Length: 232
Image (tube, rainbow, N blue to C red; front, top):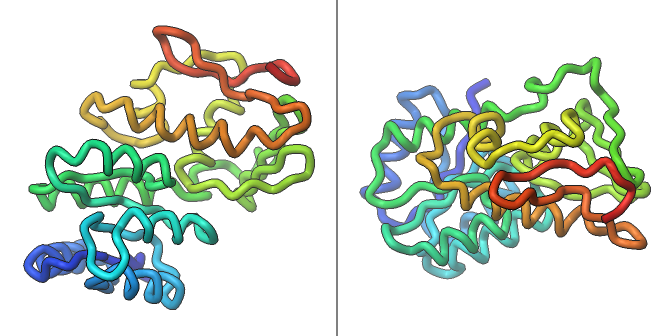
């Protein structure tokens, strides 16, 4: 079965261009022209990925991203205009997995889609089904579930993959470039802000313990590691 992609774009020329090339790449494509239709189709179709423009009628793209993240882990790649750095960063903080800037090349879009979709449960071997960490942190690679003190967390695929990497290498310090290469899966052109945004979201979700525990520690000037302590 082809993987299903929902393209959310109000510029018909852009959505047609994306749909044409995605279908050539053997994806099943559906198009939403505004934010309200995007939310409706996302719930009906359960797509494998959402390609989401931020400038939309009816409901803006950031709101759509926020609503999708409330009850779904579907990968989201946001489309933002050149220079809209604030919206791009906010989109990542809301749970988007990646972004592309207009004007973009179709080749770049296809590469980013392929990289995001490659982060699937098959990446993790079933022999490592349950991984335990500090502070009653548990990760189930088969069900792709994370629990802290029996509380299940709603993580995006990107957040899950990042935590999995850190959890399987406790105490090791990863540079931002290493995290981009191993989790994002391709050259991210040196934009390490995506790492910081994802780490920030992940740390917030993990702080559900009493007392709160910071499982992920920033190592100044280098990157991040998973602490081996119960709390910090």
